[in-house]
Length: 100
Image (cartoon, rainbow, N blue to C red; front, side):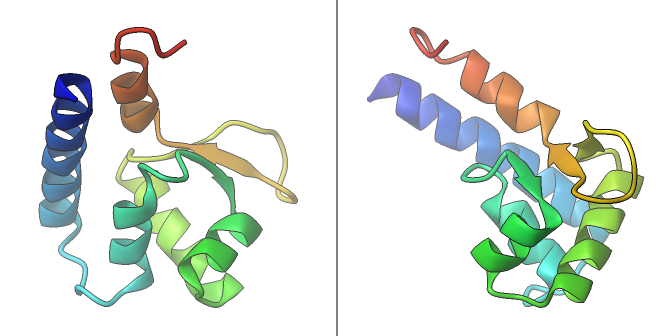
């Protein structure tokens, strides 16, 4: 339970800092994606759009904002079927004892 609480606090701090930096509206796809990152730290635009229940266009715009801010990075080559990850969330998962 302590590990879960520590994880939740760490992720909440990251999300608050990201949202403050981005200045996105509370109902924007960007904000929704930031809030979703703990559940989908590795994603494609298609999977994120489905997860957020937002259009592909709005989701790719949100991903672009997060990439520009250094919050997510593209981990595949090319323009199609790109895969993105959030290193900070993955690092937070990696810090959980026994999670590997």
